[in-house]
Length: 376
Image (cartoon, rainbow, N blue to C red; front, side, top):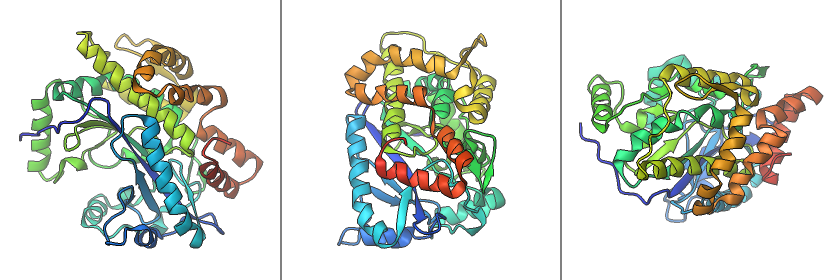
């Protein structure tokens, strides 16, 4: 199977952010995406270019255009949210986000009326119905297909660090799971989801996709739901590691870190340098450690099995990536990662709120952070 890779501008960036529709009175999820999308649609009846449906009708996804900077992508998302507000406010719906909703029950959620979603739920049954999850996807343009797989392998050595910083799903169905990112554990139950295979040649990826298609595992490439995957139709690497950010500031921080890592590895390839790699078993262990312990995770750094506290590694990464951020025009956004190191990730804030109140208070805090645009 030949998989062409679209031409795209090097290190162009696009962001997709999944948002919860929360009832303003009960704090529970509202099954209202169809109404919201109809009211925000252009007058010609087409789909809004920056607000899209998702698997469940308690969700809308805001998406940026193809941008040169993370700030530009963030501005697209902010404008989309500002257009949503009059519609959702009139319906007494609040916008919020996090990797999961603190207490909503998967059993009561409705699926968007699209064939691809119905097929997914029919095939995956109970596990598919548990996908009450919200994430952030960052696309970064790759100008040469030969770079895609090496960059993906290098990103896997920093997979756990991104997941720890972004962790925002400690609760599931009203319970404290003990995990910083329960979303990470749930989402990997879907077929073809989770940590990607590490292929050295594009032909190996093509053989894999051919096998999966021929045996009926997938119908289209988009049904490969890896945490990091190529997006051949867009000419990007798509990083899907992160829980949904609870506010725009942290979204920009995590997106800038992702953007800089991809460009950093691309520049290393240009210079003929060898990119870092890690065995699949270390990557899998790091995924579990970061999901379980978040900012307190001690992660495996390399093939030699060296280990380091995630926050110590991230602090070094920020220094190393400063020149890259300057080239990409995201110095200010990358610097916001330091705020997460200094004050903690979303899952930690949610747990502190729950200690002082209850899960209704946690939902209120998520709603407040979305409106404020920064951590509270």
